[in-house]
Image (cartoon, rainbow, N blue to C red; front, side, top):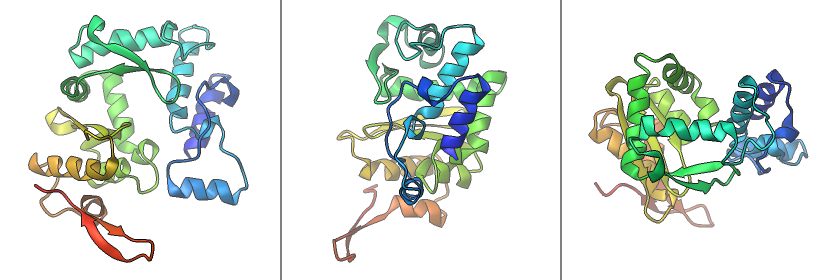
Amino acid sequence: EHVALALAMLADVGLEEGDLACGAHEPLAARGARLLREAAALPTRAHNNCSGKHAAMLAASTTHGWTPHGYERPLHPVQRRIRETLPTFTALDDERIELAIDGCGVPVFVLPLRNMATAWGRLARHAHDEAAAARVLTAMATHPFLVGGTDRFDTVVMEETGGNVVCKIGAEGVHSLCIRDRALGLAVKVADGAQRAQYPAVLRLLQHLHALPATLPPRLAAFLVTPVRNTRGETVGEIHPAA
């Protein structure tokens, strides 16, 4: 489904998979990886988990009359436009926003956790009276499967909260989210970058803020406490929040 949508986005603006600057990798979801194996197919650029983001950057380029070539480079107009927009949401001046290269090949912006949370809170607040911000959050809340994937954490959180919590996983133990009805933005970073503490931390934080009930629905509870199994399939322990 994700691959088909990314390809459809490209087709809408007269482009194709070869115009994507991201590399190929296997699907992150177990279901997607299984379907690829069963089809005896190799992963393509469209299978990259950022192919939709890249397709959107290409679409923005063609819509504004900018050349799509080199859209992944920091000085391309679409990347400059993204950077120009960041101070509005992050509350950081442009010169304080450092630049790096994401795993998918496009610029990524270095932000303190406080400013990540600020950006999500402001996105939620702007969505109350600005059409563009409202479209972003409504699209994510209405189609959580396209944000996460089959039974993945972000999908389940958005489905179980009816879209009131909108969230997006990041690399190296980062998670950003907002509680829409309170226009509250949150950001979590696991110090060692491992995901084992990431989901329990996000869930417990949402519980402390009363965005989730004390007793979680089963699909979310499975992310809060996870069993540790040995190679024989025996449960030998569990990972759970300490507070």
